[in-house]
Image (cartoon, rainbow, N blue to C red; front, side, top):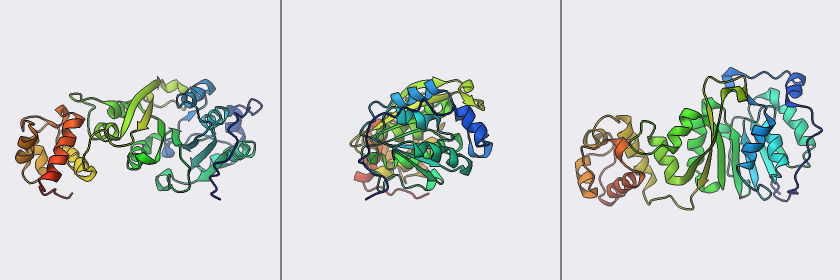
Length: 295
């Protein structure tokens, strides 16, 4: 049997008798580390709102990255998550999380380690959500990793710096629109859930934060070869102020041919193309066997 047992009771836990999170911080001498990008979310109502934004969790395994002292973890258990797998790098937080695990009826599994190295697929039953207040310093890296495996997840509810969140949901002809926008929206329905002010955290970050819900599509929104798509959007947005006939030369030998065949003007710039147009370019590159340059 996998350690991630999928036969746990989905009943909600009553954690009202637990010490307040502020007491947990004092007991375990927990102070947020800047080096780990830590900003603890201690507000119970906000944690509950994040957990509730993912809907019914009674049949779902939830993966939480960077739980810290366990504020969101508590909310997920109270919401009736079938199982929560909490991945924490900070050794200081492990003891506090293990105390929560002891009263969770086996529904909380605490894993110590770096989320960038964690296997989010193996032996974790579907449906599985990722619901996390992400460490800001690795949030984009983690998202790209999960997008690479998006078909393995039923949903992702994630907190980012607002600037990053706006990039994820950005539309063409905006300054925020770019590689991350295209890749995320190609694979997932991307929605902003709500924003958070800095004073919601301890310590307050210097920026606002945003909760985003990403629901993976069964298939990418438009047909396109992934490697080619990623390569051409990297080239296009790598020199976003240049016209496509120039910027795409970093990816393909003769972009004029591809652009002409897809009916896209070579005078346009990367930020003006829709997701569908980028996918059309990627398909045309593959269909014409035009050589794709390697980075």
